[in-house]
Image (cartoon, rainbow, N blue to C red; front, side, top):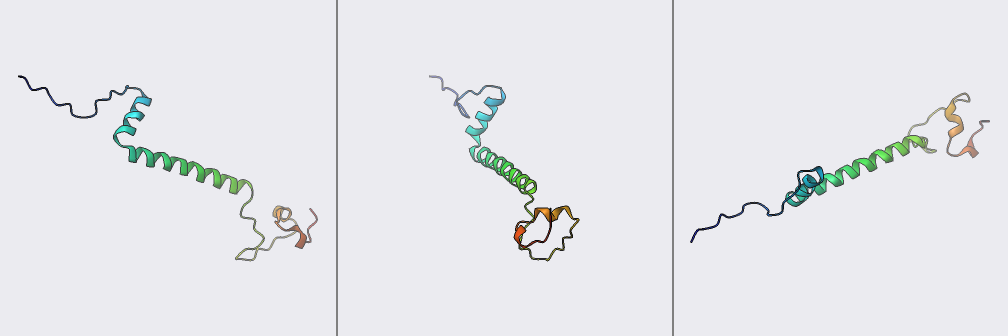
Length: 90
């Protein structure tokens, strides 16, 4: 009787395409693939949040830690959060 060779590794064949490589990575190292995917999602969400903050002039708060003097001819004078307390005519 001849002993059959033992198969080392996983018996599932994966294709040699990019999708097959991703499937093989998910099969072999799921922790690394999952954490990498969550990291990419987190970086994308942080980028979108920072872009929204910049586009909506997020640093223009009514109450600040440091006083800021804004003159009449400053273009930021029209963007004040609470225009009730201002004397500017924009």
